Amino acid sequence: MVDADLTFVIVGGGLAGAKAAETLRSEGFNGRVILICDERDHPYERPPLSKGYLLGKEPRSKVFVHEPAWWAGADVELHLGQVAVAVERADKAVRLGDGTRIRYDKLLLATGAEPRRLDIPGTDLAGVHHLRRLAHAERLRGVLASLGRDNGHLVIAGAGWIGLEVAAAAREYGAEVTVVEPEPTPLHAVLGPEVGQIFTDLHAEHGVRFHFGARLTEIAGQDGMVLAARTDDGEEHPAHDVLAAIGAAPRTALAESAGLDLAAAAEGGGIAVDASLRTSDPDIYAAGDVAAAQHPLFGSRLRVEHWDNALKGGPVAARAMLGRDAGEERVPYFFSDQYDVGLEYSGWAPPGSYDEVVLRGDAPKREFIAFWVRDGRVLAGMNVNVWDVTQDIQHLIRSGAQVDTMALADPSVPLDGLAGSLSG
Ligand code: FAD
Image (cartoon, rainbow, N blue to C red; front, side, top):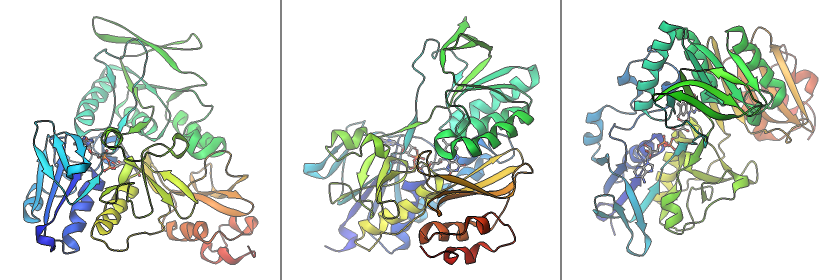
């Protein structure tokens, strides 16, 4: 069969799906490419939704992966505002909500993730928000602006990346902000307590109040309006609006009902895929937030919910769909911006996996690199307001070599020579 007779279908029009479609064309595929997405907007990127776009500093037009005309030019058939409700593997077809069936030769599931919901009384009040979609960001932008004008209170459940970025944006608008977080520091599951404390200090200096070691138990309101947020230790915080930023769950319903293998909860859940992003069905692939890929560096499956993983994973899946060698050793990477702090994190080092955090540079001035190290080997590194070091950090991680941690902490020692500083 020649390419022109083939139909490749992509479910999900986020960054992973969009980049997969783009790669199919740039690799010369000239069959049909069909992209189905339940959102009505053309594929867009989510990072600005909690940063520049939320702050009103970046126009709406800048969030899109491509201008609308690009899709027609690339002959990608978009089915926007349409939900894929089933994958009928025996017939190699995707069924849409309106009953349409679309046959595929290869299928990519890039269905992303959805915000976890607070399971407490009061979440149906009008002032309770989530942040995943462009429409959410548009609404939240208006909310933050009016909270800022009226000295209003925002309570944020969760001190993860989205919770902290929105806290920073809300403070820039002038809103009062309280963040409620069960762990003792922000970003605890990613950075551990040592570096988490740096973020406590950063936000506290900007006027954010933290309530650690507690969970929301109730959002109290009247006539549909939020009045307060209560926590399990009996405290009550005044609130006009509440943002639930308690993480995201992979959208695996299609894969699950189609009988595809899912990853264990310990691997982050998601659709289980190999290093080429192939699922347990050889004609179906998964990429982006929904995929838990076998990771050559860590020797286990890892589900990564970050922009870079969608940006690079979509193309990896597209090339694998074309039968081209696609496996690559990507070090997990993400970035964040909060106030005047910009950072990049490479690697993976949850608490318990490292025995030491090595700081290089000036942490109080927030110009430093943090390294998470086990047995002298760098597992992860985060550069904060220090730039052009990602390649070197990723090289240290990939090399698996033991390094001299005194030299690692010393900014006068170039990073690019450190991989061989101790024999490993
Ligand atoms: P998604 O972007 O979630 O796209 C999946 C799409 O599929 C969605 O449009 C969804 O509605 C659609 N879909 C799902 N199921 C179906 C179905 N059955 N039928 C049809 N369509 C369906 N990462 C960083 O590294 N740095 C950041 O600073 C950063 N900031 C972020 C800020 C916000 C507010 C958010 C929400 C995320 C941020 N991320 C960031 C994470 C990053 O945006 C995600 O990792 C990325 O969007 C994942 O892309 P994806 O294509 O896998 O999934």
